[in-house]
Length: 303
Image 1 (cartoon, one colour):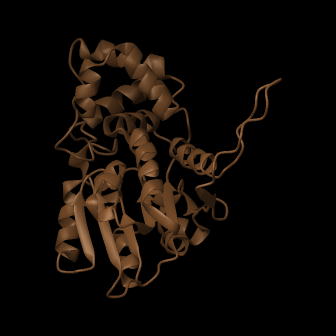
Image 2 (cartoon, helix red, strand yellow):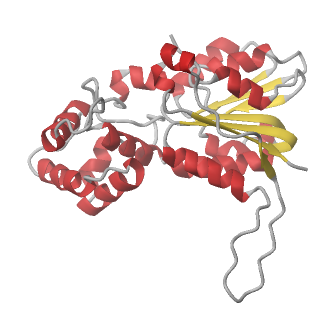
């Protein structure tokens, strides 16, 4: 069963109004969207986006007959290019990263827990798969990806092993990559598979997740009406850092000056942080262990 992460905190952050216009940019399997829709009246509107065709099929099956709902297959990075957002939005929800259904469906290639084609694309109809990336990238590029997106301290060693392996046989399956990493690194960290950081890094690279997040935040800023709320749920420090820095950069804080120069002017404030970062409760973690690394941040659009 799909369990939406930090559902009550997300709804509280959005401050849903019955007649408001909201966008869920990461529909997934619709847990957050259904809860938002329950709070909307007949004049409310809910826009749904996802790049995953299976998620869109789920949305169309569940909501296509509801006149309050609009559905678009696409990356939330492009939310401001959707004409339906041009009227302005009272709230935007972004639940970043891989969804539970994507992890659970072994054939998508996101998980090292089951052997499957090494794909990892959220949109299987575009871009290159993880296997294709590993087959064509040079050692330095692979190492840079593992270090930047996975914070993997053995990135160079892993990249060297991947390049050596592909000279005899390209790595095409999740099981092959997971086994190589386990042979290379062993079980160094209790409770963490040695493939964890590498799989995370490849997934972020294949899907352009951090670039999409930065573009989506800019799009949200452009489309939120005064008083509108932005709610972002992230699942690792790289994502949360982007969200935190974006909110701070749009909060009218004076940038640091340079010695012997006049202090720079503070930029106009466009957002204000609403409260501090939220984390899952102990009861949620017990019911849904996948929520353990979630961080939720809320910001409000200023006039």
